[in-house]
Image (cartoon, rainbow, N blue to C red; front, side):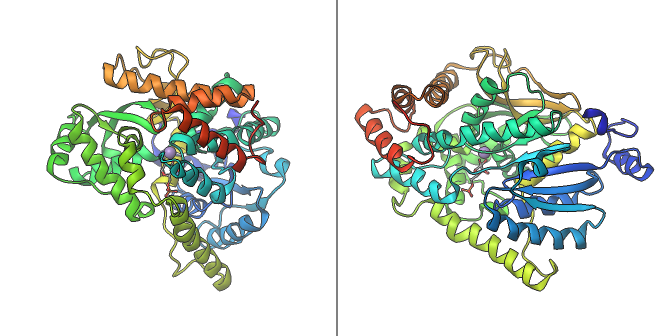
Length: 465
Ligand code: G6P
Ligand code: MN
């Protein structure tokens, strides 16, 4: 319960937490990572160690359905924490729900339904039909969503059964679809928070242009997940620095600074950000808008038999697991290639803002309820929110211009129909969703893609009639 998470003096500054911890006032946290075997988990664990003064942890539990894969991360975690954060009293890795979910303060969720293996299909099947092949956008994201929802809902129900008051920080994809289902399935759950790190990764790239640290910049942003725009970027003096980014992008490119984004495909994505900013006057888009605004170009650039999923399998996944094998073999993290990343940093910042009641601003997916004045009240939008011990409080965006409103309403309808297709077991809803998606549009093409996706997902999707 919340009472278990006390915040020392409540002054809201990170330093006070250290004091609180020293005084023994602050309850040490019991946390679980769902998707313990994820390629992102080791970096997240490193961040937890790096932030130990701000996040006193009593126990860490990894939970996954892939026991063997998770065991490698689990053994590594034991070594890492013994060396870097020995105050953590218990480290567990388990496939048992009760062990994973009982008596937790925080559960961090990063599931990938179907694993990277199904991501290959999600990306390659649409490309076969000449449509964008992407993890979360277009038919790939649709397929991933149809696989994810039941698992996501079951896991959240499991967590709530054992820990009714735990904070659940969810960054499982496709986040827009997951957020829409969250609203329908858990409408009153104030402690289930859906977030995404992409805007932050983009902000890091902006920060380096401005020679600032991300923490010195405060973004204004609106949209849906992987479908939004920056409208302002305030520095410590309150000056909006987004116009500088705009003029920078007129003749230069911004590249990602993130270790996880060094691959050429991510570099290309950030190059396209410059192109989008030049083509469209106004706000600066999330990189994911490239798939909706340049679908033909994206298809042309893709290799239909070797997509991002293949790159990740042969790159990040191999590297992370060989790092784990190496550490587990040598029984030390010293000299290993372990690095942290924006992904974990963002989650830990958010947790700190909750337990220390800091009311820091984060971009979170929330029910619109008037935040974006001229979008439906029940849309799950991604907007700046204050995050504190009482949860998430969205800021007001106001009305948005026609171009953005049009794009967003279309995408929103796609997202809702996708979730309808899941709940109604409806082929008709699924087809309508895909036709609405800007990366598909054409009905015969949508049917052909859908039929192939149904076949590829027959063991994973609800049956569509
Ligand atoms: C960003 C997005 C995530 C997405 C990831 C894909 O972090 O916010 O939603 O899953 O990129 O990255 P990858 O390197 O796996 O293609
Ligand atoms: Mn994301």
